Length: 415
Image (tube, rainbow, N blue to C red):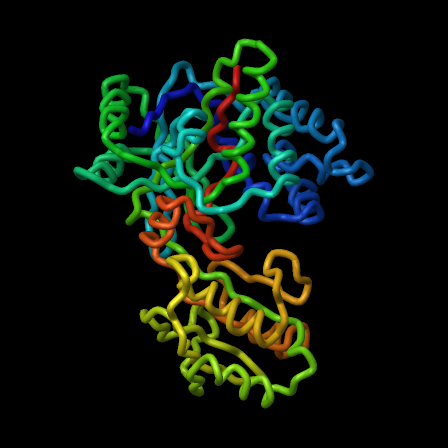
């Protein structure tokens, strides 16, 4: 049974939302965040990525986190952020040129994470986990949402969609062409109905925000152990999307060198594992190969100025995870041929995720930054949920979920 909770969010006053809204803290470097802040001093990155303004400090210096708290307090005291008058929930809608995504923003209980009602499919890194734990604890707020998926039932997604009607409470036209809208749900009867609907949902699945979720659990545990009033710290902010209401893109792999092989020699070796066919139908302006294959166990390779379709010969992994295309590519090609045994840490291997045109892959190889690129088909949402149900961990860089939500539009404070 999934428990969801209303909360009284801090949100930008209506006219300030476009200036406050920011990309998630973990998709920009400190230098990139610094440039954004320089051009827009109201950017929420001053709160979510405080190290950008303190280049002289180590990213984990206590002063970095206190700076985030101070910037957050300034946004409130200056009237840029204001707390809603009472608890509610929020519809977060993202409109792109091709899709409209509609999710429910609410609070979730840390105990449901601990008990497995909230499932994860990704390993967390201690350094990132520690950073967000200290950030949440010092700022006393969850400044960015965790994105989660539920299996739709009884028209729940359709009902949530009806709650986004009329003029939104906030609207931001982002620089990628997407439109982000927030609709506040203040009617207690509607909130109660949503709580009832989700009580019949068995599980939630983290799509984006594994570190934010685990860090929220850490903060709750710290405060429980210290004996202080835990208050809102036992809850964290999430945005819930149906399993048909999200999309997954693949992560491309790029390798710096062929391990001393010529392209011809590499082609002979990869042919042991794949049927390799010349592939000339590439739309360079698209984020995927067109026409891309809907068949499993097919990927596309860019090598020495040409594209190839590669059909894996051996497709039976030891389990569901081992049968993923990214696992088979890693085991059969990257490890066996190129000697890349650590896909998380090998400097020869880089990843390119999301809706990036395949022309970017071509350019990286053509200018000599990389020797070969592999364009991967996206994993199915149902596969990710099945792996999470089995307590499995996806290989690194397996999924790029959309929508990507902005920070600073809805903030959950712990007191």
